[in-house]
Image (cartoon, rainbow over all chains, first blue to last red; front, side):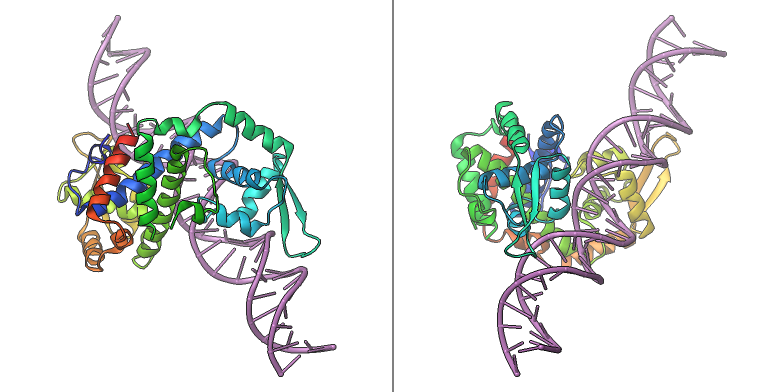
Length: 149
Length: 149
DNA sequence: ATATAATAGTTGTAAATACAACAATTGTAT
DNA sequence: ATACAATTGTTGTATTTACAACTATTATAT
């Protein structure tokens, strides 16, 4: 579906402007699909992201700042995100004894189990991208990486 | 900058998964830049988007549903967005006499003046995309459009 | 006519975000 | 030792979002 049809705008100032709007629009579109998919599991995309980050380091713990800098959306508040996940029993939080300013956060078995269930539930968000070929996906990654300078 | 570096993740399940994350990440990145740029003018990206939509139809009025379906982020609440813009004197709201369920919304001179100032302030958000060529921008648009099916 | 359905928008409310101010702890320089 | 700065997180608060329930108006069917 062309972006022109999706937002009913026929003309753009330039290909660059159109690309900027297309990225914002597609990002929002993908976010909403992902959000709907995760709703069945009782977590938000941001929480899911944090769990995946923690799984990547499992069984090691991570400090908050480390999590934040790996997050897709840097503007969400990691303190509160982690607290939500702790309430659900998905992560563990401990003051670091070596440096009492920092907090060691790690994923629990329950968190790992949730991610496993999600993995097993099939393609999830990737199903959404089935319309493009692997070559297109690579090309997309190349251009987006270049774009961010 | 590669997405691997940006979110410190070395491996992805597939090019498709990497592309999905790249879109979400780049969308959020672009949104934040845009948001910061617009802050000087006292409006949010969503409000800016509504103003641009209204300018596209000026001097004709639009009804709320029409605005909503052209918005980049369909999930923001057009009623409240328009009310914010009305409080700032950027748009006008009138109950439609022909069909009293609907509301006619149009951009005011003040709203047009703000957009003009923004246009004049230079490339704005597009400056951000300067790293890619026009050919890349076109390729990006092609792939994103295809991706959304 | 009347009831029912469809359209167009509004509003209530819990949760999340943005942003800045605020601890608490550790490191560094005199 | 003491003061000052840097690091690491937390919290306050206004704004925004998500989502559903709601009102008002118009259209359709019996």
